[in-house]
Length: 90
Image 1 (cartoon, helix red, strand yellow):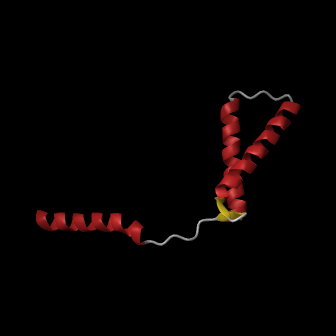
Image 2: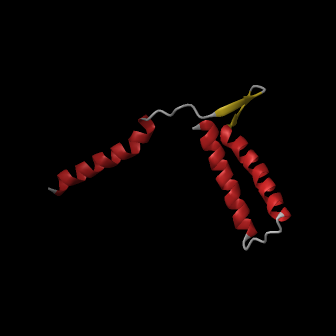
């Protein structure tokens, strides 16, 4: 009984590790700039940093104090990056 179980477990592990190799990937989103392909997430990230800077300027104009500014700005940058990715490439 244990020998059959060991064979079954080995077969399942083999399938588990081989399956990702057999699955084909779709083309990764990339932007062609003068013949060089850049990953699309890079543009989303740069635009997110710019949007976060505008939010920072708006908060400064409103004289708002943040308790943990580094966490707020990192979270805003991540939010803008993921939102832009979903808007433009999903």
